[in-house]
Length: 306
Length: 325
Ligand SMILES: Nc1ncnc2c1ncn2[C@@H]1O[C@H](COP(=O)(O)OP(=O)(O)O)[C@@H](O)[C@H]1O
Ligand SMILES: [Mg+2]
Image 1: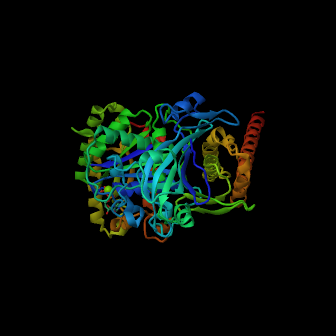
Image 2 (image 1 turned 60 degrees about the vertical axis):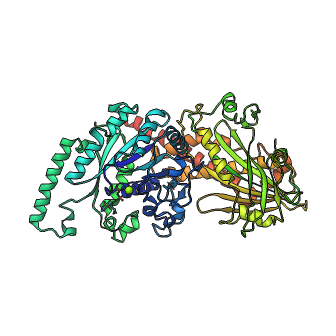
Image 3 (image 1 turned 180 degrees about the vertical axis):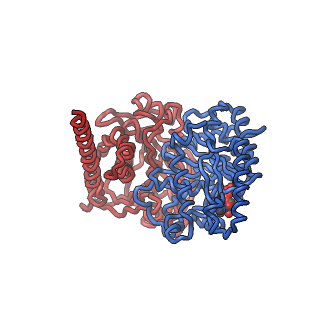
């Protein structure tokens, strides 16, 4: 299964959420890999806690160079042995699958989706598909060449069949309309997808939205120290946003997860472990949201309602 | 084609990748031959017994670089390394890039035709400390490899996996097994001669062996066979771990164990492609690493589990029947 994470804007929580979901999915027993295609800001190394790759790899064999034909195979990192998060992870937890990061290049910049590049991308995905049951791709924000490349590959290469798109957005008026535009409007995913050979309806059925850093007025009341008036006001705003989301096509049936705002993630981009929850540093609801999303990636019920 | 022979002053080194083809069923022998046809005009060798097995012709790559080293010594070498691919049981793919380092009779680089005459051989110019080279390549965690055969072995897997012969619907996803090895010839003194087996934190296996056997291509068969069985054991035991037998989640268990029974278990066939004269080395490795012992335990665990679950099903059905009556 190929899981493609995208968003209209940067700073939506796409990378942090996707890394955590990949981590949860590996703990649930799948062999998982994570491709950092966000060539503008490859942050997955930092989130997974691989110090030497905080801003992508320096080994000149990252995905960016691989796609340009500058290395015959891309470099990779085994997260269980190289991450310092969770501290001293050591060997893989019992029953967990592999967790491997294919980093982007340090200062890789953008590139164009030339035919050779698309060919190399297809080759890589086919190879990884034979080794991993779930492949995560962190795409750059907005309408990018990387997105064009992935749309083309998934339309043309029939052997890469089980593809799911996650569109990340924060729970604000602006983010909701930006995410809707990215999918439904001119030059959006559906239109471009159709142009590159996808069936529009079929592609639509493969897209779900993820709401990130959402404040729940009721639960977060204590945390934020809200007065009753403020809580009531937040509730009102929340209702308004829900109405907006429904009209924009981001309503309940097309949302696959809502990730609550988390104190740890507000401070640092990182994996949240069960230990963080026991230590009461991170919220259990956050981990639950990640784990549930991980499990729902191929849960028919989560994908059938459109 | 490997015409290299191992003798004193030489060192054979290589990298192996082991994985599963991205295909829904075993390839037939005819398809296998087409898949492995890496060099136009050269034959794919194949055999049907004791199990389906085929070897591609070798591809050569020219190199002129420093030799591997633990200490960072700079000894230059010129020549070629060879890459071949094999398919076992129409399903398990292995690629192997390898070369044999031999002393050069001259102190300067010669014309390429000279090196092409002995494919899969690199001539080193200067004094190479073989232990230092072997250790740097296949023992030390941070040795200087200098010859990047791993990339070539891996990109050969890339090329095979994208073949139009494959449908991409593999029943199992299996991680690539990575082996890096160095074989040093020694005089026969009755010692099985296993030096070192190291597993790097990310899973790569490093193996150093001392051998009395002169034919490098026989040695390749041996290391590939070891790598294949080590990979098979590792993969199957992890599938079981993941299936969580005894957790009561029968669907989960079957989902992980079912494909293993259907597609992999019967490929365990130690030494099937190894020269009888090298059985001793295989057995010595097995004694140290306990491959067979672990495999037997694993298989028994699967059998018991399957038996137990059948029993549960029978009992459940019976009680449903008696409930009806
Ligand atoms: N659930 C959350 N709660 C609080 N902060 C979050 C949450 N998810 C992400 N963040 C924070 O938002 C910022 C942007 O996240 P990031 O994953 O880098 O976004 P993107 O990949 O979309 O650019 C980071 O500082 C991150 O820690
Ligand atoms: Mg990001």
